[in-house]
Length: 288
Image 1 (cartoon, rainbow, N blue to C red):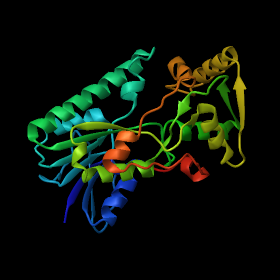
Image 2: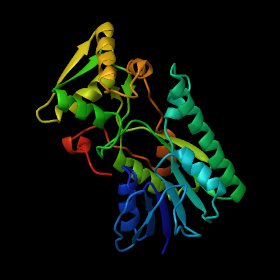
Image 3: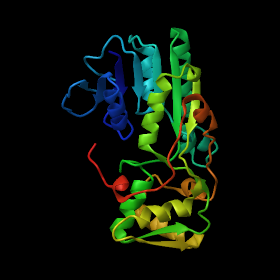
C-alpha cells in the first residue's frame, strides 16, 4: 500500500485531495493545526511545519497544500525519504512581481525563492518535485477573493466595482486543483517543473463577480462606480476595518488581464478544469 503525507490536509484543496488518495487505496497521513479524528486509511497528526510529532520517515509521495515558503524550507532540512514531492504555489509569483505595492512584490519574491529552495533540495536528493501554481481559487467557501466578495455582498445587499473592471480572469475550482495534484504523481515528465493551473474559462472580472452574485439568495445588486467615487468608498471601508489587504494595486489589477496558459499542464498530466459555473454553496462559509 502506498503512503502519502499531506500538509494542509484540512485546507480547501487538501480535503478533496485526501478523498482522491483514500478512494484510490492510499494510506494517508495528514497534518492539521487542529484536532481531527482518524478514519480507516486516514491518520491525522496535529502540528505544523515547525513541529509535527509522529511524522513518518518514508512516504511514497508528499503533498503540500499550504504556504509554499514554509514547506520548501521544511523539506530542505527534513530527514523524510520520499521519491515524489508535489507542492502548491501561486501565480502571484508572476502577477505581483511588478506590483506598485511593496508588500505584494515581497510576496512574489518569497514565492520565487521558495520554488528555488524546493527544486534545489529535490535535485540534491534525486527526488521529483513539481510546483503547481493555481490562479484565482474558489469552490470551498474559504478563498479570499470570490467568497469574500460573496460575504460582503450578502452583508450589505449590494457590491460595487470601479468602472472598467474587465480584466480577464480564470477562476480555478478546488476540486480540479486536487485532481491535478493527484495526476502529477504518476507523471515523471513534470519533475523539476512549475505549472500554471488556470480555470477552464476566461472571462472579464465584472462578469465573474456578476455570476457570483447571481447565485446568492437574494441576489445582491452590482453597481459600477466612477473611479473617484469608488476610491472614496474603498477609503471609507478601510477606515471601518473592512476590505483589509485590498489596496490600489488590487484595484488596478481589476482592469488588467491575468491569463495563464493551461497547455503545458494539459499536455503533461491531462489537466482539464471546469468552466466557471458557480453555485451558492461554493461560497458558503465553512469551518476550517
